[in-house]
Image: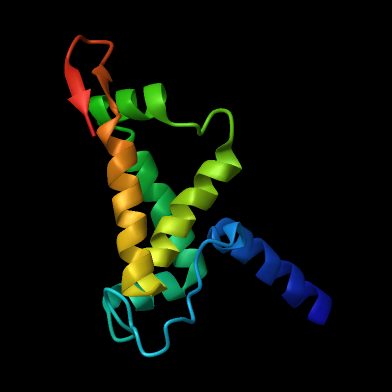
Length: 130
């Protein structure tokens, strides 16, 4: 049974981006991050199945917007590296939810910087910018 638990734990850590080794969710001690243990996001994201199903649903819903889809299609690496893209999204969610204030702000700044370069023209001729 321990083998199964360890395999599941390894897969969950891989999917949440923690395997990238860039975050330490246990330090600094006493820093509850941006939200803290009583927050709704700690409770929702604490149920991995719900977080995964909800997250995938949110990504699919986002893709229904033609300008968002154009930006994703033109700039995302999901077609070449779907698992890597999922890991980076998972790292952002886990880090901004459970990480220190410093780590959460680092991730937010990183995503904002990436999104500054997401500009273009949708197939219908409308411009988009993330």
